[in-house]
Each structure stands twice: as structure tokens, then as C-alpha cells.
Length: 93
Image (cartoon, rainbow, N blue to C red; front, side, top):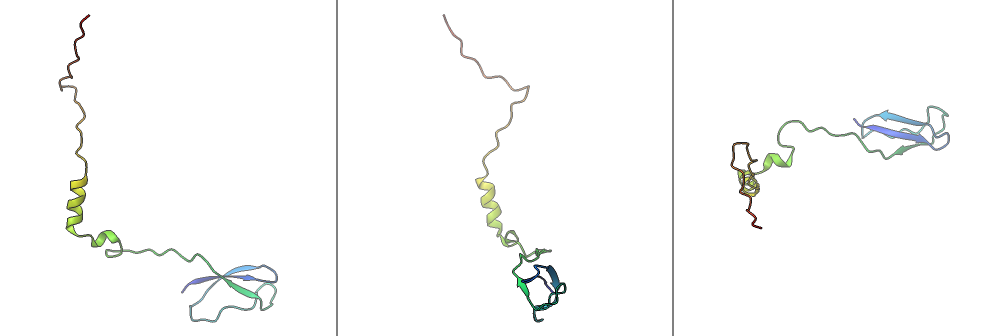
């Protein structure tokens, strides 16, 4: 069951109500008692998907991983302290 936001047009009282989607919207303001409640459009609640099958990566074929590995640039090894240093050009004067 979703949570709905309401606001009274007369006294501007705001409230949340938890009821089923098929239930009639609330009409009477609990603060002033007038039938001026207006249901507001809310952002809604976040949905949490658990388990496999909910993400686009769950259905990727094996060829996707192979293509991704081929596109990965070759790693350049960092020079070690035992590696020979590049020769510096000799200058003659």
C-alpha cells in the first residue's frame, strides 16, 4: 500500500495517509474539519530490487565480456629499480 500526501486548501495543513490504491481519497481535513483536502503528487518511494535478473548486466552474453577484454588497453609496466636506464645521447662540443 502506498503513502499519499495531502494538503488542506483552507488551512494549508499537510499530512500523509497510508491506504490502498483502490480506496477513496481523503476529503476532510483533520485540523479544520473542512472537506478541502487535496491529494498531492509525490515522488513516491524508492524501489529496491534484490536478487538476480533485475539489472541489465544480468542478461549480458559472454561475448560482451570478451569484447570488453579486447578493448582494454594494454597496461604499461612501471620501470623497476633493476631495469636498465635508457641511454642518454652523448653531446660533443
